[in-house]
Length: 114
Length: 111
Image (cartoon, each protein chain N blue to C red):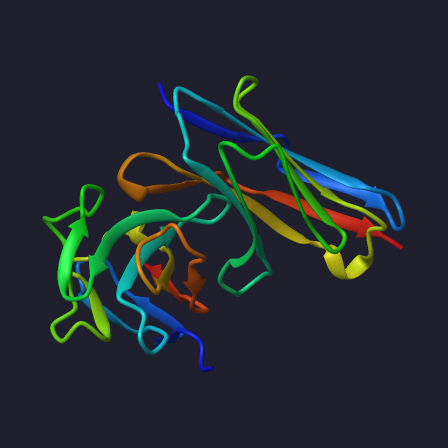
């Protein structure tokens, strides 16, 4: 079984630029999560999708972050414009049905904003 | 305020000994608690889940306890090996299946 795929693995941009991350969850997994993990911290949930609908985006900075999961499969997370404090690893995870089950994480995208 | 605290940022344990990691929380009533392992440059990997009505869960050399009165979970690795060196994260499931992660504890098993 293929795992959660994310790309790119690394990205370096300057502040005020925009960036997009892509995630392909495990086949058949209905729930998809985007997390932000700052160095030395645990993952912080940004947004949770159930199929193509948003379940929780209470911690997503909506003035600069956006995410979509149009066909209920893969998802993109965008930052526009980026700030220095956005430097972090962005993790994507998926579960079959809700977070009562194991979350399977991708390798993450490491973002550095200069 | 609501907090999750993992006992220390880093823990050094001699190979062969039991490593014990602590996860304390305040002002939450979690339905269940999970432990994950994270290696450098990788995403977290699920290890164990324990529900609020369970006292203890075991998986091979791993053991998790959950005391809802003390608001604490202990994570034990017996017969520790250098390959167990990693960061271990606890995660609480609070209302509406929302998961909150702790900062993690970096475990070093010394040969």
